[in-house]
Length: 84
Image 1 (cartoon, rainbow, N blue to C red):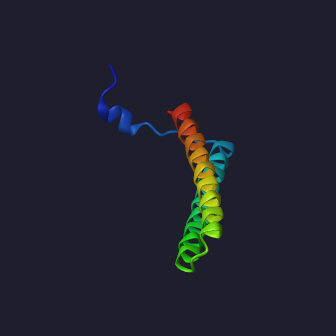
Image 2: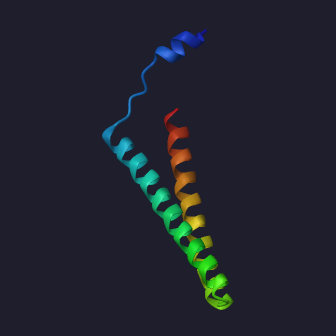
C-alpha cells in the first residue's frame, strides 16, 4: 500500500510536448478571457451611450469568447487528468 508521504515524494515527469500543450491551453484561455472582458466593457459603454443594439453585439462577442475560454480550460483539465 502506498502512503501519502510516498505519493508526495513521487515526481511527475512532464515531457516537453506535454508542457507545451499546457502552456498553450493556459495562454489560449487567458486570451479569450481578456477578449471577453474587453467586449463586456464595450457593451457597458454602449449601454451608457444608449446604443443598445451595439451593446447587444458586444455582449454576444463576449459570450463567444467566454465559451472558447471554457473550452481551453476543459482541454487543460483533461490534459492534467490524463497525466495524473
